Each structure stands twice: as C-alpha cells, then as structure tokens.
Image: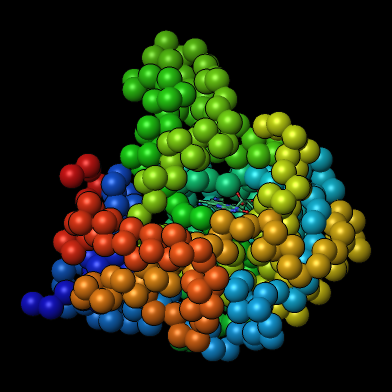
Length: 419
Ligand SMILES: Cc1cc2nc3c(=O)[nH]c(=O)nc-3n(C[C@H](O)[C@H](O)[C@H](O)COP(=O)(O)OP(=O)(O)OC[C@H]3O[C@@H](n4cnc5c(N)ncnc54)[C@H](O)[C@@H]3O)c2cc1C
Ligand code: SF4
Ligand code: SF4
C-alpha cells in the first residue's frame, strides 16, 4: 500500500521535524526522537491515521512553502525574504541579556508580548526537565516559563507541536521557533488549521541546521559526563555571548558536578555541525522569512572572547513585527539601534552562500530522481550564480558525493533506538 504523505515526507528526507502534524493530530501522529535521523513523526497504521496524515500534509512546510505572497522589493529581500528594518541591540534586563543566546532579544520580546497584552502566552522550546538532552515544546504564561527557553538549543526540537493547543485555546499567542517551524505556522494559518487571530506574533531564530541526538551524546562525551550520571542541565549557548557549552549532572552518590565549558566554535564546528540531516542542507530559509521578527547573531561585530556581553541582530519582516520592535524599544525593554538593511548579509555571509548552494543541491537531487522541497516563488538562482566557480561545482558534485556516502536514495526509517 502507498505510504501516507507524512510518512513519505519522512522517508524522502523532506521532514524538518517541526512537529505540526503531530501537534494538530496528536491521537494519530506522534513525534519520536530518533538518535540518528532526528525528531520525526510516526503515523498510526490505521485508516484514521491515514486520514490525519492526508489532512496534516496541507500544513507541512517541510515539503515546501509558498513565497509568492512575501513582498520582495530588491536584492536584499530576494536573498533573505522581506527585510523591512534591522537593528542591533540587546535585552535591557541584565539577566535576560546574560542568559540569552546572543543578546536575549527573543526572550525580551517574548516577555514583552505578555506584559504588553499582545499575547496571552508564548509558545517556545525548552530543555526537558527529566532529560535535558531532549527538548519539549511548551506554552509559557509567565516570565519563569519564558526564561526556560533562554539560550539556543542546538538539538532536535519540534516547536510547532504546540499548534493543536494554540488552535484549541482560541487566545492570541506569540510563537518562537526556527525558520522551518515558523514557515509551518504560516502554512497552517493559510490552510485554516489555526485561526490567524490565535497567532499574535511570530519570532524566528536564525538557524544553520539542527544536530542530532547522537551528536548531543558526542558533546556529552567531550564534556566527560559519565554515562551513568543523571544529567540535570545542558547548555549550548548563553551565559555570555556566544557562551560555553557546558553540562551539569548528579553522580550516582548524588553529588552535583559541573563539566568544563567548551567554546561555541569547538562544540558547533568540531562536534555538532556535521550531524545535520540532509533536509537542513537543502534548506533555503535560514533566517526566518515568514516570521514577523527574526533574530540572529551580529557576527560582523564578533564577541571578544567566549562570554562577552550579548548582542542580537533583529530583523522586522512585517509591519506588525516592525511596530512591535519599535514599541519594545520605546518601552525600554530592548536597547537597540537601527542598522542599514544590508547588515544581515554582512552578519551572515555563510548563510547567504548556503541559500545559493542549497538551490543547486535541490536541483542536483531532482536530476537523479530524488525528492527535494519545493518553495514556490523563491528566487535563488541569482544567489547560486554569485557563488565562486569552485562553490558552484562543489554544490553539485558535493551533493552527488553525499547521496552516495549517505545512501540518500534509501527510505529513512525512524525508531527511538539507534539503528
Ligand atoms: C540549531 C540552531 C542553529 C542556529 N544557527 C544560527 C546561525 O547560523 N546564525 C545565527 O545568527 N544564529 C543562529 N542560531 C540562533 C542564535 O543562536 C540565537 O538563537 C539568536 O541569535 C537569538 O538569540 P537571543 O539571545 O535573542 O535568544 P534567546 O533570548 O536566548 O531565546 C532563544 C529562543 O529560541 C528558542 N529556541 C532555542 N532552541 C531552539 C530550537 N532548537 N528550536 C526552536 N526554538 C528554539 C527558545 O525557545 C527561545 O525562545 C541558531 C540557533 C539554533 C537553535
Ligand atoms: S515537517 Fe513538520 S509537518 Fe511536515 S512531516 Fe515533518 S514534522 Fe510533520
Ligand atoms: S536549517 Fe532550515 S530546515 Fe534545518 S532546522 Fe534550520 S530552519 Fe529548519
């Protein structure tokens, strides 16, 4: 029998793990943490499961999204999605700025969404209390809850798993997630699965790709956390900018231990980054084009050392987003100065090149008969043409090399234990 469309998306490397399908149909679809393939949905093998998957695929941005409604006025917009205005700044609140991944702008804006009455709750990601290697999607109603989200989690997370609750509660919510999570929220609104009035604001964090649970385990090994220990905390970013990767655990006799901290560059470059799944390598939106506001690191003015005072790059994508950032600055919640719109390219040269290369990666996979996401209306060929000859060749030959190395023609099969 033909696979249901959600299981097919997983099998063909199209799923980003956003969690929307499971969030909207929790009785029929559940997310599992596959150590090697990522957090992915599993559909019940019943007629009702099939029906749920047939409906859920309409909100899935993993298979593709529609860029035609996004306003693109010039090259900057074509390369990054709508960029209405940009700022560089940080949370006025010292605790948020310190704990935040870059300058704590996301947490400050999320808290302001609550205190200003814009939203009744904030949907976001937090480390699971029982096992901080894993993440959970939560809706926070107060500062304490929102603070659980500070610091990026360079690990699998399904932010859109809260969509079912958001649709059911019928209250305006702020939503925080990666670009692919926010793209799904936009698609869910367009498909009528979530009323537009229930999403008061969307905030995306920039994202170069999510590492797997196996990579998290390698990080814990590097931090010399004993296998028998009870892990109580694992931080990837924050506590200064960009922050150290560090773990806390309890020994079998109950003693609290703290690992050494390794620099972000060592943890990301040396351990985590290589585990990113193929879907992240063909991702053409690393900066949150569908969000009201997106936030990343202003790498063009890099931190001095590993735990500098944090700074964020803040991008308004919609008029609603621009007005909200301006209100936050006026209220003193955010300390931020306007920057020219091209600062995004200065801050993220690697992501710009990645958008161009991903276009060729998609084409190269299709040429050999494999599936690739389809984002209608996104103009990427110009970015590919702007790559050096070496980069252009690499984007095509590198794809075919990886197809062979990772046997990407095989169906991805997920399970909760290593395969
Ligand atoms: C996997 C990953 C890759 C990234 N790659 C880049 C990059 O290439 N360039 C760049 O500039 N920035 C990147 N970032 C984003 C960057 O680390 C910061 O998140 C961003 O600058 C916002 O910082 P902040 O201090 O304002 O956020 P904070 O105030 O610390 O808030 C972080 C928010 O992000 C949410 N969050 C954390 N982890 C996840 C997750 N895995 N999935 C969904 N939501 C999550 C939390 O719920 C919280 O609300 C990446 C983040 C992640 C998780
Ligand atoms: S991308 Fe999201 S909606 Fe699509 S299959 Fe994966 S988890 Fe489900
Ligand atoms: S790289 Fe793209 S697809 Fe992968 S997690 Fe980030 S936003 Fe999602």
